[in-house]
Length: 284
Ligand code: SAM
Image 1 (cartoon, rainbow, N blue to C red):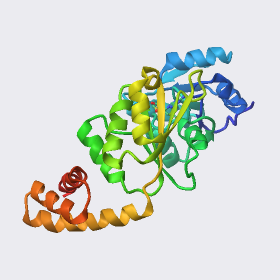
Image 2 (cartoon, helix red, strand yellow; image 1 turned 180 degrees about the vertical axis):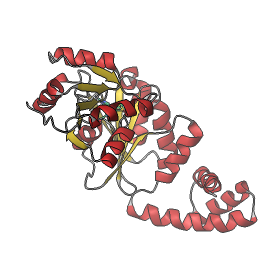
Image 3 (cartoon, rainbow, N blue to C red; image 1 turned 90 degrees about the vertical axis):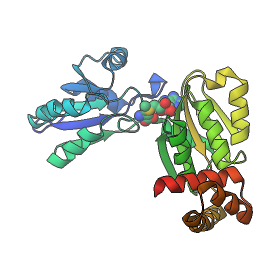
Image 4 (tube, protein in one colour; image 1 turned 90 degrees about the horizontal axis):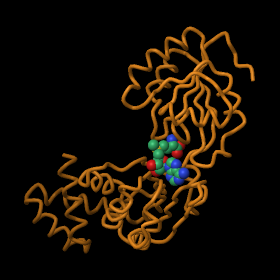
């Protein structure tokens, strides 16, 4: 493949999320032809390039050196070089490094070309069997429990299908928080190790998924995408009414008392109302 060599160009190249057969022919052509491959982890990408019999110079670009490396890469692109950006797996910039570089290239008028391919987000959505006409990608939930629950509280009434990335370390905790905030009955799909040997799709309610994951250590191994059904339409209206009620009560009463009264008046569970009141105090 001949790349244009009169102006610099950044190719944003997707790589497999597990199964190496998912590399595209175009990705191989571009990776073989560029002057430089900017990679999240050069050792990891070197193995991929070796597998593809490609020998190109590599430069690391990860979340800790991204800003400084960007300047060196911009210099080379300005000088007319062809650069490929890859991450460890899937599509760069999707919960992966690259955003500042792409933004800077576009601001300078340097050509940016997507070489599309695998992404765990789209792979999971395509098989979950939940609505895909509208969805909301939330990436990773916060690590800290308080921040995580606040985030979930803010999403509890979103009507779109929700998609989260999750690691083996936190899958159990996140599912437990999801049950607590969204309710155990919400429908969801847990996509594990997509395109790999132990690929598993678990579906059911959040409560059922938590039980399966707790009961079977194998279901806690590997990489996960959690796809969760959006909230039923009436939930948004209910939440707005509850927020309005809490807002008035919180002006006059301490948080605990305000949420107890709001729970009695609305018929909502006490701990859900309390968490919402806490989140509202945080938003003030
Ligand atoms: N850029 C990647 C993409 O396009 O999918 C995502 C990178 S993000 C740092 C890594 C997360 O993606 C994992 O923690 C997991 O949530 C998800 N993931 C990546 N590969 C996966 C796979 N084979 N099966 C399930 N989830 C995967």
